[in-house]
Amino acid sequence: MGDNIIKKNVLIGGAWPYANNSLHIGHVAGLISGDVIARYHRQIGNNVIYVSGTDCHGTPITVRAKKENKTPAEIAEMYHNEFVQCFKDMDFSYDLYTKTEDEFHMKNVQELFKKMYENGYIYEKIDLQPYCENCNKFVADRELLLTCPNCGKETKGDMCDCGYEPKNEDLVNATCQQCGKKTVQKENKNLYLALGKLQPKIEEYVKKNKANWRPSSQNETEKYLKEGLPEKAVTRNLDWGIDIPINGFEDKKMYVWIEAVLGYVTACKKICIEKGINWEDYWKESNNNIMYMAHGKDNITFHTIILPGLLLALEDNYKLPNYMIATQYLNINEEKISKSKGNGITIRQMLDNYDSDMVRYYLIANGPEKKDSNFSIEDFVAISNAEVVNKYGNLINRTLKYKGLTEIPDGKVDEDIRKLIVSTYENAGKAIENLEFKNAVSLIRELVEKGNKYYEEQQPWKQQKENIEEFNNTIYTCSTLIANLSNLYEPFMPKSSEKIRKMLNIDKCKWEYIEAPKNYKLNGVEPLFERIK
Image (cartoon, rainbow, N blue to C red; front, side, top):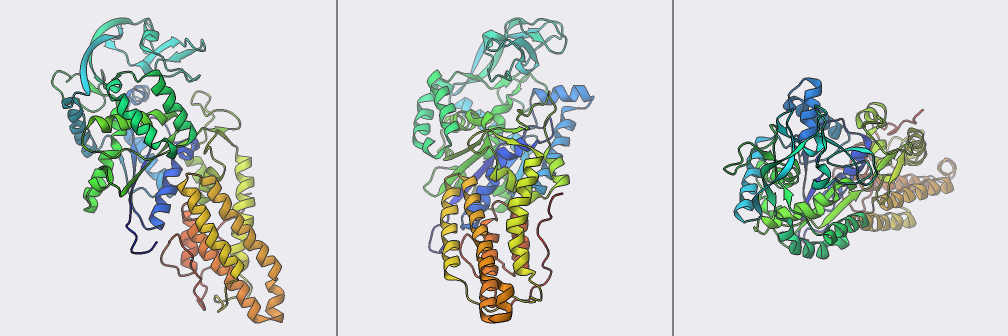
């Protein structure tokens, strides 16, 4: 990217994982897109802020804490620390990975909440809610048990496995999970978000941006808008969460979804203050900023409807997200990952047994980009060995560890290979910008295959004896190809890309054609990948 081109300010938000269980590979398959796009934008020279954090509040954490005889804070902190380590080991390049228990987040979310209240988008309402006379408390939907009106199976009150979301009328006579007694309906005063009032503006926003979204985001959002957006409670009777900054609601906490999605604003603000840059360059509307949201398909409407609705309710020129990178479900051995079945594989288990670049490669190249995909260890091993070790690893080994080679020769790059490299940058770059990461990986893999084919055809083992100039050209061409592959694979396999740059003395990682340094002494060239047994 030339110096005369104005750099864009790019904000990427990765969905906030919930601190009540370990991260399974399905979670990471839904979040890795954010890291791909962040790394790519840094390579093309844009200013990037990439944020996420741990969602620490809400009922499931209090339920888990009771079960384990711990405080909700202890549970949230335990999982937060685990998440931090997992993302670090997966080489996620967050500028800030924070948590909703963070002081800065809590204080700033309260200010945003107050602003929406003052603007008239959050209002007071008394309605009937399930109350357990035995436990002497209003019961959260997740703590209720009822028969799902859609599939007839027993479900919790927030969401059934069949995808049905119980409505208020479905919760009448539901059972309190804690004591097993039937609940009664009792009047309760809460604050609500006037989504209906915001619907025309949200529709206008969706119409303008949905072409940048994957089909699942478009379809799910259209469905909700067609049904008409209901008012949504923003307060709950809980002990654990963020206090409501409005008089008369001291006994309530902020509903977890409202403060978690606003975490994108607070996290960006926090890291910008730390870096000494203006957070409004990312979060206020201008022609020079772009925004991406990476999440799983179960979080679509929180990003396409709720987040834009909250930002519009602030009436303060907030930028609304341009791109929604929604990922489908990753199933395991043809089954949906389910806590009750206990069939999930945690990302920690994968990282303790396999190379992180191989895990990343698999989740991108074979992940649930546009439709549900299936994961099995057998498939992971077969693809890692065939595509990463045998093709990519082999090209590096046979070139840089060529018997007797001590330095990169002073050769010429084969013109056809040079053209192939340049067109791969162009086409893979377009694919990444179109959120087609599988396609981008496929284009880079084709370049690796063509490199191996070129190597075979040139037969450097013969050239070395018969024509040293041709041998030098072949090895130099392949070394240059490897140097460029370290750039091209950077968003997908950053650890091995960095190792190649060290081997070849390349200091910058840009999305543009480079040539290997001539006569550079090859020290410490090691195989990048080990075959998985």
